Length: 507
Image (cartoon, rainbow, N blue to C red; front, side):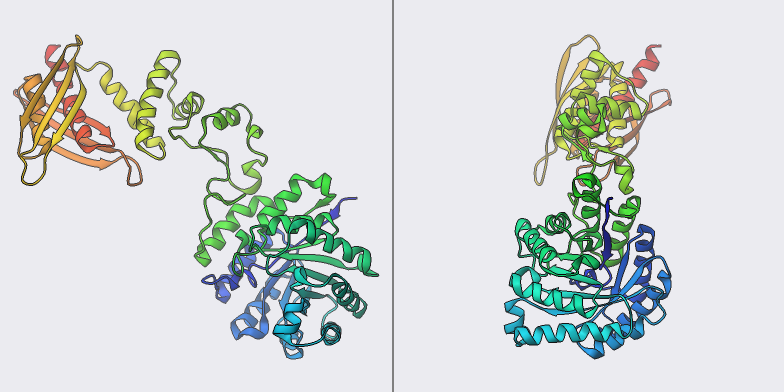
């Protein structure tokens, strides 16, 4: 039978301790509602003795959760802390008091300044005192990751005998290697009498970037509860990220003989919510919920994903609420990705025409970090504008600046393939370009309107220029041109208008 792994969320307690991530009571209630939608087993709602605000948060979340989740309040191994937690949890239908003490040589000697015997005595005393208020008591052995194996067994044995229902084995400083942490959990599973009657929890920090690996090794070696946070929020480098461990368990359910009851489709929503409330942005390459978690820019990867998603994705994006895979068009994208995206936009190109479009796409992509849909629309429009053009732009070069006179050197190709170059001065760079165009095209016109706007987002956005020119007989013609260079956009727009004028007059 598959082991049920409880998910203990401490976003509202340990997560909130992350510098700059504090939440008020109303914000905590918003997050708590999302945790209930995720179907977490335990919500650690706060540290009631620490402040009136935390006390109120625990009290209100306890009422909010009802039967849906256990609500937990943290305490030190101090009677007044436990009294405060018990009072905050008074109306909870499923209350849990989480109490404990440091057990590593460092904590005993430097922080607590007590002996091992005194530590065991305090541990037993706090568990027994908490049991007076609630049946469900969780004991944490702080800094267990750096504790002596045999002393840790001694402490855990004592609290199990005292009535603890959950024993929490934290790697408080993120110090352990996964294999060593697993050995520690296994040592406890084998060395503590009656441990099979309680839940064994792991609470791992990410100081060495291994929190998820540590938690997973803990589960593999017998742990049945994982303490974690949304987005891995928490002290210093953070905690185990809920979305990571839950999806890891889901991917390896049979090897681990383990499963959770988490509604994984709520992960992306939860991630965005916590990020919005705390102001702690999620890095783009964050596993599961990062902006790039299901994005592909390599041509090889894009081709594989388009043929069959799981060639490069082990998780269906929809399973975590991420919608669908993203094909990110860059200079590394291939024909397959471009063709796929163009078809989604309603354009179908094959063979030589596709090759031509792809070449134009690469020229654009070399100038931009990412090519967006608006860029592709602009590229196709530009291609259509040039397809039957009487004149097309071969090159344009500008020389300008204070105190220089703006000068444009421009080369056009006509419908027969003849190439002509002209050089002109102007009051500004665009005036110089347009005078050079007129020198070659030689058609009477008057520029009546000129406007420019960005086509896409970002500092490297394409600029689209719209011009209107009036022919000698008064007819007005509109031209558009788009490029990353405003001078090129302006030149293309003017040529487009003149080409339309010439074609109309020839008809």
